[in-house]
Amino acid sequence: MRAVVEVSMYPLTDDYIPPIDVFLEKIRTYPEVKVSTNPSSTRIIGEYDDVMRCVNESMKNSYESGVKATFVMKVLNNPADKTKWDD
Image 1 (cartoon, rainbow, N blue to C red):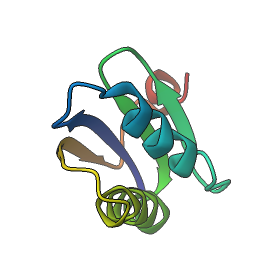
Image 2: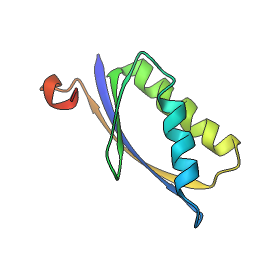
Image 3: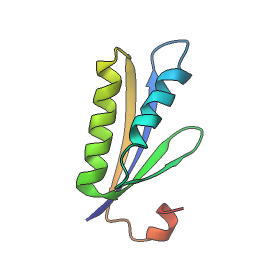
Image 4: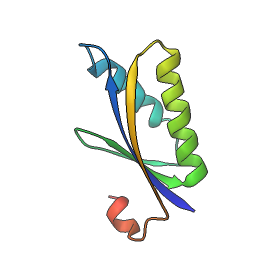
């Protein structure tokens, strides 16, 4: 089953760009998912287990590095219009 996760990271620091960059770098290390970013969120597209593993491990990596942040996610299973999500 395919899935899409849209995630936004809100680091709880004045210098918020570096933690977001590290989070995005980690997400991009998973070749089995497709990543699409915009100024406010990131979409991770692929097989459900791959997408969730990518998100879980990337968030955990951020927390283990000492970053305090809030993550907001939307999850969509089996997107009907794959071309819309695969841009």
